[in-house]
Amino acid sequence: MTFLKSTAKQLLAVIGAISSLFSGVLWNASAKIAVQVAGIVDKDARSHEVIAKLQAIALMENSWASWLAVVTGVSLAIAVALD
Image 1 (cartoon, rainbow, N blue to C red):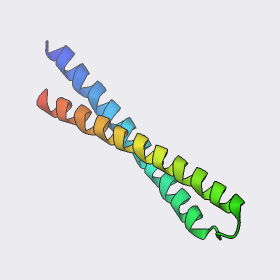
Image 2: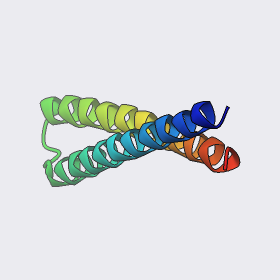
Image 3: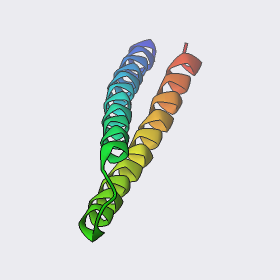
Image 4: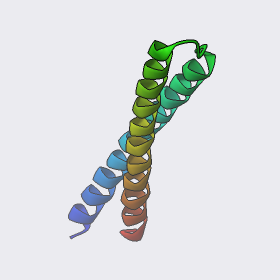
């Protein structure tokens, strides 16, 4: 049983680490998009379209990042509970 328990802890720790990494990458990309949107000059209808698309992408990345943060927390909490 201890082998199974230690393997599960290691697997959950790896899942937590990987999801934390991807969560950080997505939040970084989302922040970069927000900076790009802030720099777009709002002069014509085309810029409205570009701004809307970039904001939609940023929101989607934030959503994925938050779910990955949840996966990280749950994985690490279970790994600690197995101790």
